[in-house]
Image (cartoon, rainbow, N blue to C red; front, top):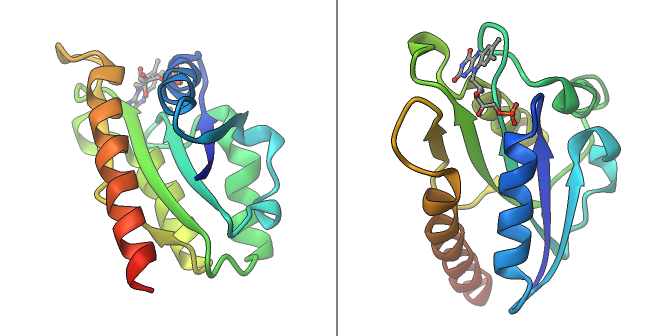
Length: 154
Ligand SMILES: Cc1cc2nc3c(=O)[nH]c(=O)nc-3n(C[C@H](O)[C@H](O)[C@H](O)COP(=O)(O)O)c2cc1C
């Protein structure tokens, strides 16, 4: 499967996790990884499965590197029907009212443009005991299995 791991970050945690996901999936899939600031939403491909890894900043805002991508979704409303994605949110539960809201915002914008979210959104709490990759790797394996099943049914 062609997979593109896209990350939105401010201090690098999402990038490190995106790299871990890329490495873990590379044996079985054709995987690319990119910063959201380098991606135009209109260029997302239907033949590629997108894994979005995004943190949260400010008061539930998107991190710096995800903002141009989100702005383009909002302003240009590209037709993303046929585009599939999964989303992993990095945050800190100390920010109780805005925990991982950046990833929610991004998923909502993609869906508003017609993209399809596969699986449940997974989150990582920087104040918790788990390492992000320990949550993300089993999660993405399950998401990809779900996506393969759904693709067979179509
Ligand atoms: C100034 C600041 C504001 C933050 N605001 C939020 C927030 O509103 N909600 C949340 O869930 N996490 C918040 N976080 C936590 C980050 O999302 C978390 O540390 C994440 O792992 C950072 O990932 P990154 O290095 O990829 O940007 C904030 C962190 C900082 C330093």
